[in-house]
Length: 112
Length: 401
Ligand code: FES
Ligand SMILES: [Fe+2]
Image (cartoon, rainbow over all chains, first blue to last red):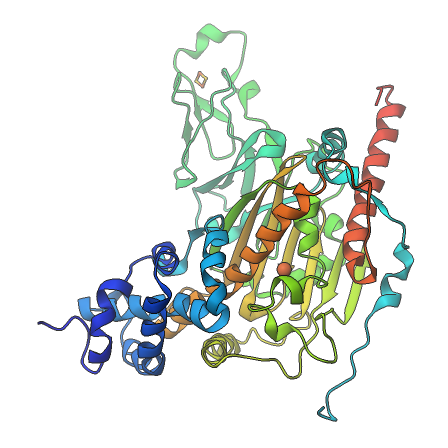
């Protein structure tokens, strides 16, 4: 299988399909329609790799990423959402997700 | 307990002057009272509607809907770089000029009969205009709306002749607002909600900390401490109809590992930008009638509550940032800041719905504010004062209330 992410992030390949999501509101939606198992698995696999991923991505301007780097960027951004769910909310996340639907994200610098 | 932990004192005496009277619950759902508030307050106060960074160059414009006035307003940066505002309505037969939320262009062309307006609202061209004689183009300018900015924030006033300039209206808080990062902001996150709740019920939720530990037990755990179990502010100030609280700094906040890492990235970035530690970096401004802006550079949000009816409101949150995303780290740190603030605010919106529902039957005649809900009491008193002034004015003008 061809690699979807830059070298050094093999441990996250499995999560690309689910979590390499473009757009802040889409990432929020993905958080909302994921299962707890999916979130926890991604959180545990990714948390130790975030500093490394940012270090790699910081070497290039944001608009010069190749496809693999862009996927990694989108996954890191999804991690921000998942970290709130797993680390802060835990069991309360499913109930919280319903409330969140009324709070529509209408603008994000990451979408520019 | 750490001996260096300062002992927190609740600032009860700073709000003692507001009294302790129960508050009539009707003011929070009655349509007749709402109509008075609408006339006395919203139709003639400075209302925040956006930020100058949305008008980055001459010719750019934004459209804003103000439901409380059934008004659509165009805010335009003209060729001369000045910001002007006028109604989104053609002076021929009233048609709305634009449907887009924002755009760029020196002219506004009405789609109905092609009257064409300049960036200052003046009629510049109209097909076969001679048949309107004796009407002149000069008489066909679109009605202006008073507009001004403070700290980059754009305010409009629907009073055709505002009694105060924006500066006078904001009083001594105006200069302090100018020192906040929002004055230099170039971009922002935005999230919005509509809620079946009165604008004051909605707004009040965000100016008391009594609910923090109950409503934000998981997301807001860093705000409570044995010294200050409710995360109360350590200071209040009042200035005309406006008010502030000073956010208490928890000396030993409970922070989760990734939360600490992520917020650390935001803090580093803000420190490098030199926007940390301004005198008002802990001040939470509550600007009458319904705007909040918090000084904290790392979570620099504004929140505007727009009334729609006695029991319906719309809220707009923005997190303002200085400089665009220029690195993966900044983009990630800011996305996390969005997630963490929005999660907290989501919990608020949920409870506000219930706060309104319980009042609708009319069985609850009075509500109660404790000292640490003093800012809610201040808002109510300021609202009443303005409604009373308005009724007096009307009476003096010979109109019946
Ligand atoms: S209504 Fe606008 S041109 Fe006729
Ligand atoms: Fe809250």
